[in-house]
Image 1 (cartoon, helix red, strand yellow):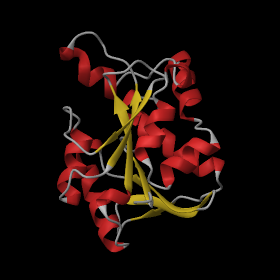
Image 2 (spheres, rainbow, N blue to C red):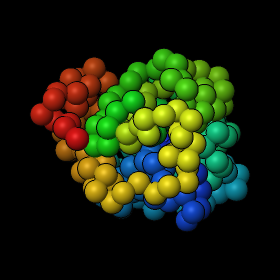
Image 3 (cartoon, rainbow, N blue to C red):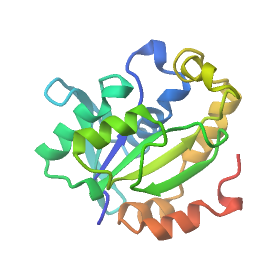
Length: 196
């Protein structure tokens, strides 16, 4: 099924803007700028949202205004209102299993310990949505994880790698949005296509 909605997970407010947990929000904001999609705040959806054309795709973008662990409240309500099935949703989020600058697509599955994904699963009542996992690196010690993700800003050099990786080429974006996730994975997961 074609992707009709991309949601970017993170925490709202300037305090969290440059933290690693906001990699998904940053990706969606980048898409909004690149394709001229205006994101407007809505209390009804607990999110900022916009709609526009990305190539031939009619796409909605969503930034929950809830905190990360309540992301599903916004994604679930929004998807139901616009009758968007879980299989038509791509959720962009930070991933500590990969170094900064590495992207990986995943079709459905578990949470891998990610509270935002857990909330989205609860909000949609389904695991059957695609994920764009944006590498932000690992602190080396799980006891440092919370501060690493939510308190300290990611260094600019690492953000530069993340931002460069997120500038998906038009052809890859087209394949992804038409719902051919396996073909998109084949292109994105090639070593030379996505080196940190």
